[in-house]
Length: 127
Image 1 (cartoon, rainbow, N blue to C red):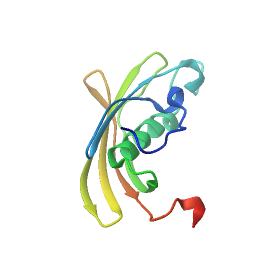
Image 2 (cartoon, helix red, strand yellow; image 1 turned 180 degrees about the vertical axis):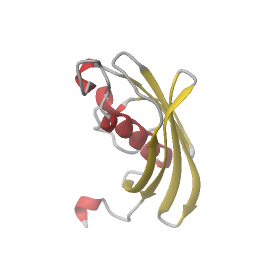
Image 3 (cartoon, rainbow, N blue to C red; image 1 turned 60 degrees about the vertical axis):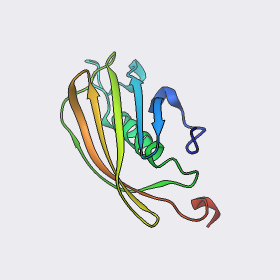
Image 4 (tube, rainbow, N blue to C red; image 1 turned 30 degrees about the horizontal axis):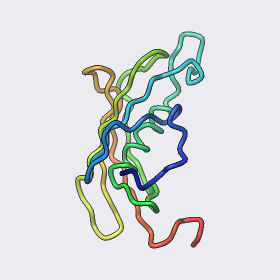
């Protein structure tokens, strides 16, 4: 059951295909509206959004937010590609979670990152 980011635009951030304790898998069909140029190169923000969404689903708490990220864009992505993000919580300390995310196009890793997710007691807009 998904407990977070329930109103996210899945067309832009991906469709969850698996959400389990401390892990999530999300796929994204890359569309023309994500292109950065006439050759079909996809803007990195969409890839980051996919990875961020997967990380939040791996924590899967209603109040989870992104605190920090260290990421690498490894290979280009183009319109028409199908991406799969796999996120795994590798450490948790109190309200802080370290989540590793890999985004693949087929068998090729195109993006990887370490995300720090925070779960405050209240929603960040209620603080």
